[in-house]
Image 1 (cartoon, rainbow, N blue to C red):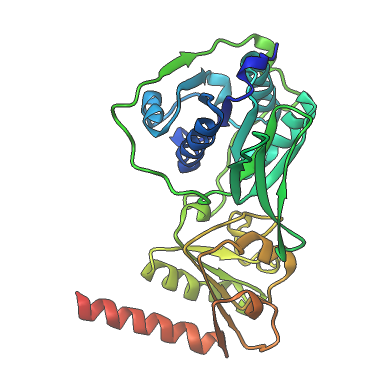
Image 2: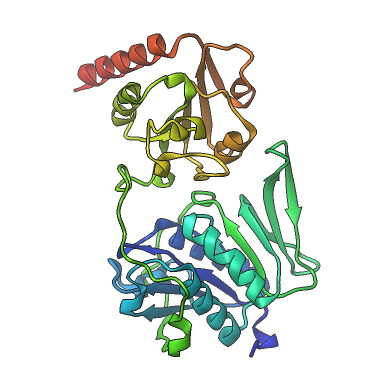
Length: 338
């Protein structure tokens, strides 16, 4: 039963992938701390896992008052129905006024289902969160109309207020080792693990070991790359910049690179410090997936390509001439400094 006195509290859905805590958990926990301080509420972070590489109490150091741990072997493989049921159960037990989750593949899968289950709305892919001083409502800001405007959305009549947030939207502060909180092991009824889906296993796609959403630099290739073999140029450039390789939907549809690298509304939403769009025309759905990058560099031979309108730096020319020269210049620079 939802507790009206807890409506200033915030629940963060943490993410554990293959036993590793995703950095977005710390990012959202610390942001939730600042929001809860404005409301006079508490922050709880929910972790669902079968194993984890970080001691849960350390999450307290990033702003959580309570870390709710659901540890069960049945959580070894991701199951949207199970995780949605568990999150709904925890919401009902704890009664938060706000629920936040990273806009990762799993967060974007679980949160809409839970919003429907608890009868509230959801603002997806937020790039800004603040508390409105007068009303205490959560101001949820996100790009709209293909990124041409920024919309601020509120949920005045329903609770909890729910939002997913693009990874790397907020900085992670230094932890406070002296901060105190509590860790709660929550036992759940077996019905929370019932599902119409039976996961058979997990088969990693090529490149799954590198999550481009975690990279500060992304080198993405599009239809202009012409064939799969040419992506080696982007991998070389990415290696020199300690970055990851992304792709447009056209490149993925042509099977030049795995879907795990796709950037856009139908792929991953990224917010790196620098984004290189190589041979990418700049469709609306692709721009919406990378528009919050700190610096956008576009390389395209078509001077009218829409990507140039979103770029901070535009290089108009043959990518097969420009990219090798960039690689050569970086190698020479590294050699001189080494």
